Each structure stands twice: as structure tokens, then as C-alpha cells.
Image 1: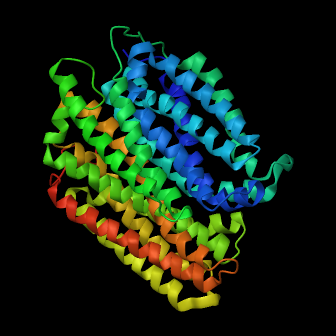
Image 2: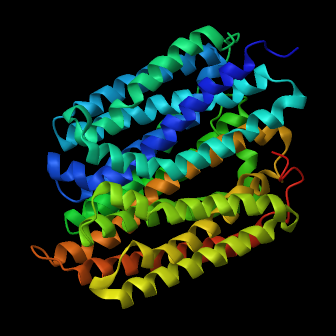
Image 3: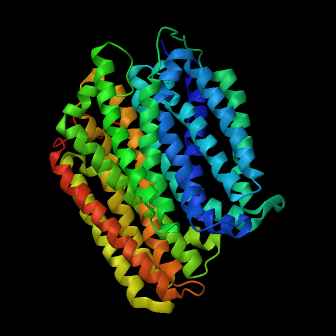
Length: 472
């Protein structure tokens, strides 16, 4: 029997998704303004976004299990309330260090909130309405992707209530307040299962691995790549190996695991993890360096930079729409998407290199739009294609793992491409020219193209098509 208040409850779930997505997109646009206000080194711009995504990726590994243990509505509302408190702390942050720390808190509470949404939808909707419910995610996420950067630019420039960039976090407060009140009224109460347990050692090893990889990639450049940066990377790799060994041992002993170990025995799934890591690194990395080039190199204000990035966001929407008509291509859609992204990145690089000081938003639009279309063609079938070879008993663990990889891929892209961007810029201090910023951006686009080529080659290891692709 369908839950009576399922549609109002779905709006609450979508509000949480919008807050999460916007808190990644808006910080990319606002980073230079925050840096000017709070001070700090250029690595702060990378940490501003990466701190949130690393915390989110780490927390997602246990976020879904918390809902099963204590009730999805309870954990969802606690996550939303904590997200709101963390947003308030971001709003009143007095230093760059405090802001990064509160972004970590935001990420952890977001990781408690977001996984509950899918479980709640499965509880509330009958099978014949499930596709309609999931179908609303696409338009909402698409509108957020298009409007988020523009909203961020407008909020920073408008200086509402004298808050400036702080308003990008303050706006979460009324959304969360309405969401909590509506959630208490409309979300169904689910029965907790206190017999379940959490794999805390596995979660700790995974977090050490993620943090140990991202920290040196961001901080190493600032300290001229000291020995500890390479030691941390080695520790991260050891932590990931230890995580795999631990999960196998716990599974054999019949204890709770974060990831079903049998997944790593599937070549297609393992290839899908690396493919997703590279694709999402390219997505976030390109968005960051283009924004930095526009604001730091060309002197665009945040609103103008947000509007200049619209062609990429609109291109992604077009790419998503094209997949609905071309879904019969299956895996070949991802090949087409990867080729399109590489072509767009090379066109954008050539445009930046040839236009010189005369470059403007219009000249960047074709390259950005092509990149966006390619990303849309690639991302839309990604989850369905990768999960096609996963058994039903493994699907929950596989979905959670892929979502975590999506987050850590974004952090990796910000770390690597941000470092590639800032290295020549800081070498040219105190007076980097437009040509310096242009060359740095071109180098990042070539790096991103290499990532996408690698991901495109790995897609040949994925299933040819997903049985249910295009159905939702």
C-alpha cells in the first residue's frame, strides 16, 4: 500500500539533494572572494571544496547503515539539522582554517542525510510509481547544476544583509528549517534494526586512505613536496590495501562490512570504480580551473564568472537528454561522451591559447558547451552500465561505493588540477599575467583530457549495456 504523504515527503528528500549539490557548486564560484576576505594561501581554494567532498565520501560508507540501524527518518532529520548548524558555522567563520573545518562537519552530516533519501523512496512508493519518483531527480539536479553557479555569483555580488559570500551558506538555513518541519510531518517513521552493526575499523582505514591521498596532493606544492607528502601517499595506498584485506576477513567471519568483498572480484565493477574516479575528477577539476581563470586571470566578478560557465552546465543537460534517445547504444554512449569531452577540452585550450588578452566569455562558450555535452553523455549511463554485472544482493553496497568514488573523484580532480594550475601562477608571483593564467589553464585542460582518455579506455571493460538503462 502506498504511503499517503509520499509526494510531499519526496519534496523534502529533493530539498536535501539540492542543498548537497549546491554546496559543491557554489563554493567553486565563491572561492576567490572568500580567499580575499579571509586570507590564506592558494591551497585554501582547493580545500574549500575538497574538504567537504572527502568528508562526504568517508561518511557515505556508513551513512546508509546508520539509517538501517536507527531509522531512516531519524538519521535524515539529524543529518539535515547538523548540516544546518554546520552551515551557520560556515556563515560566521572567522578564518580560512575555521571555514575548512566547518566544511568537514558539513560533509559528515551530509553523508548521514543523503543516503536515507533512496531508502525512504523505496519505503514510500509502490513499484508502479517508483520510476516517476526517481525521474524527478534528473530535472531537479539539472536545474541545480545550471542555476547553482549563477546563484552563487549573484549572492556574492549582491552582498545581501552585508554578508557577501557568507550568504551562500546562510541560504541553507531556511531550506533546512522548512525541510525539518516538513520532514517531521510527512516522512514515514521506519523501524530501526538494533541488531545491525557498523564496520568502524574498515571506515577508519578508508578515511585514512582518502585523506592520505588528498592532503599531500594539495599541500605538497605549498611546501615544495617534502618527504612527508610522499610518505602520506604511501600510507594511503597501504590503508586501501589493508581495507581490502580487512573486508575479506570480516566477510568470511560473517561480520558487517562496508563493501561486499565479492565486488572486487568483478573486473567490470573494479574498472567502473577507476573509470568513475577519472571522469568525476575531470568534471570537478575543469569547473574549478575555468572559474579560477575567469576570476583571477580575466578579472571577472563572481556573477559574470557564473554566467560564463553556463554553456558547460547547459551542455550537460543536453547530453543527459540525448542519452534518452540514444540509450540503445549502451556502452558506446560513454565512448562517444569521452571523445566529445576530449574534443571540447582541446578546443577550449586552443581558444585560450590563441585569443590572448582579447578572450571573453563568448569565445569560451563553444569549448565549454562541447565539454558539457560529453560529460552528460558519459555520466547518464555510468551507474546503470557499471551496476549491470552486479547481483541484487550486492547492489546496495555497489551503489554506495560508486557514490563515494564520485565524491572522492571530485576531490582528486580539485587536488590535482588545482595544483597544476597554481604551480606556474605562484612561480610568477607577485605579478602573474593573463598569459600565465592562460598557460596554467591550458595545462590543466590537457591533464583533464588525459584523465578522460584513460577513463574511456577502461569503459571497454564494462558491460555493453545495462538492461534497465533509460528506464529511470
